[in-house]
Length: 340
Ligand code: WQD
Image (cartoon, helix red, strand yellow):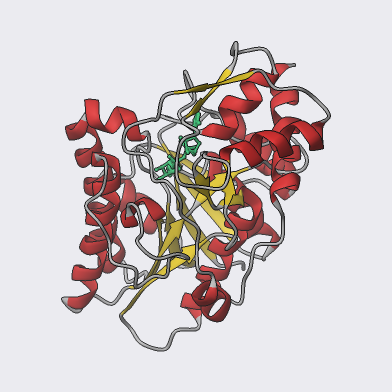
């Protein structure tokens, strides 16, 4: 019988791609999702790609009763990948209590339920946002964290500390906090991808919606930064590479001998690309002209960041395989299929 892995937020962007990769690796994902930022039809798409039924529990992963129902459903549950969280940087400043309640409480309730049911492996969805603007690049896991620029970023820093403190208190949990850089792209089939609700906050979905005619034009938030072309630099990682890093993290934790263990691991490509390079690459790889203009800087933007990938390569025996062009080709393929 395949080992089961609970995937909170498993119908979401990164969660759905991770469920597909978990099945390919021989695991059986069990999704908990309240569809607050995802769509139920995505579960059918995951099943189509996985070639099997996927267990789904619809509900809030901060609900203690639901967590105990799921954890009690099988003795084959060996771990959890905790994606479920609100993640819109701008919205978190307007609705901080919504973000603190949801993102912190779901993590606390999950930790308690895991310890109670003696399920030890936990992969946590963290973010490079915990670093703020790093002084030295590339960013390693030892790079000092700066005060986060948003309540969203603070919830990621706090959740890492909550998990680590619980483990330091003696809880028999083995956890890996994966600090993602910038997830982009979509499954090559075009069946699953990013589904931003309303106006996209992030660069690539805004680009694909502009190219699809859903937005008039992209505004580049500033081109007067201290970078080669004046636009901000990020480490854009294909979502399928990111999904595979989660499977590698589960495998890694399975092999950890200690009963309680905590590591933070950067997950990126190790390369930095500017906003202008993303636009130029998108146009080239998809053979189209994008409508865009240069606008004012966006407050709080980090100027330049990209990952040191040494630890992920060493501990997870994983590295990103897709490049920026492939990710932008897959993003556009997904957007085109969405329109239909
Ligand atoms: C990337 C670059 C913008 C939109 C955030 C969170 C991070 C993660 C990913 C959740 C920046 C520029 C963007 C636009 C633009 N979120 N941009 N015009 O801010 O690096 O990271 O999203 O997990 O935790 O912090 O990503 O895609 O918003 O911006 O010029 O319409 O694109 O200024 O330089 P960011 P982003």
